[in-house]
Structures are given as structure tokens and as C-alpha cells.
Image (cartoon, rainbow, N blue to C red; front, side, top):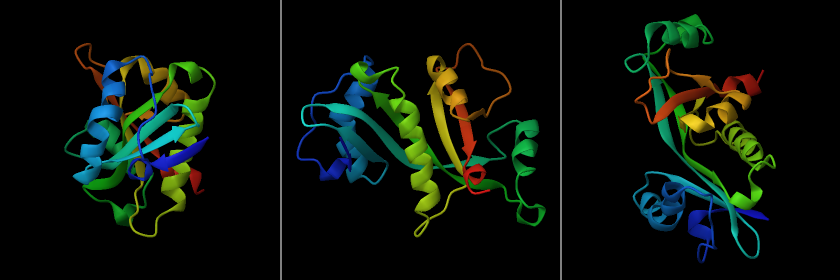
Length: 172
């Protein structure tokens, strides 16, 4: 298996995660997002197939976009003299694992790898948080991987739920 940036690949090997939207992003949109500098996609593959992929893009956690009680909770984790109106984040735009590899811990391994990538490679830019707009059925997965909700209540009409992980937890 190898993990490669999307632009390093000659072609995309067959992939099916069981979700048409996630399959379609890899085949139809990842290249565009890469060319437009909107998101970087990373692909895990073997000789025959794409096993998984994820894409990362810039984000922020801002006091204007979350509830006051959650904002106070986040600010408590930061030194008082460094309080800002928003904090830098990297967002997981997409994360998908092939049907053949689901339930084998690969998604958790990818989340751990993403966290380590962000903590260990701060030469150009730094970020404090890792965010994701999780599909509702993926909430248990992200909670298991240390993410917290960025909303007080999960509204029924929401398609995704905003979540965050404080990368500083890995540095202490």
C-alpha cells in the first residue's frame, strides 16, 4: 500500500465506498479542487485498487459561527493573553474507505495519520484544530476518534454535523 497526493497519480484505480457522492468526488472533483488550490486529496492504494482517500482544506473555528457556551469552552484551552476571534483549522473535506476495508480500523488509522501530518509538518503554516462536517451516521466514528461537537444540539434537518479535534492534545 502507498499513500500519495492526488497529483502524483497517473490515474485513479477502481474505488467504491458505497456512497455515490464520495465515489464521485474522487473520480470527478478531486482534480478540479487540486488545480484551483481548494483542497488537497490523498489516496491510499495498492497495485489494483484505491483503498481509501481523504482531502484536506483550510478552515477556522470562529466565535461568530458557534454557540457562546461552546466558544467559551474552546477558549479555555488557550492561553488567556492569546485569545482571538477565530482560530486556524484544517478541515477533512472528504474521507472514504473502500467497502472491502470497512470495519478493519483503516479509517481510524487515516484519522491518526492526518493528525500526525498536521502536528509534525508545521514548517509553512500552523493550525490548532482539525474539523469535519460529519455525516450523521459517521458521528460515532468521529467521537471514537476524539472529535467533539461544534453544536449544542444535532438538528434533525442538518445533513452533516460540525465537529472538531484540538491538535494541541497531541503535543502535551
